[in-house]
Length: 137
Image (cartoon, rainbow, N blue to C red):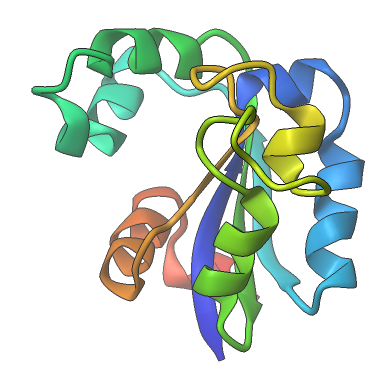
């Protein structure tokens, strides 16, 4: 059973579409193994997105991720990483396929509703960043 991290970003939380997004995961065979609503500190956001530190969008990404609460989840299922990324859609919601989370709920490439791990290695790192093993059911 594969696991991946998903973060419902501040824009989608503010729009009150948390349940609609979770329903998409569950309707497509993914199970919520852990979940919590949190407010990221600037330090946590900087550390989590450190891989992008030298990119021009890094500061704006950090500022956006601390602009409101997020919902952090561990999703579990067969091919969970690929399934989650398929459900999310392209990073730019204007390029995302119809019916994907980003096409339906995101406003822009910056406020794009959701984050998902892009590989098994990153999923393990990202999950451990937010959840102790004992908190994953």
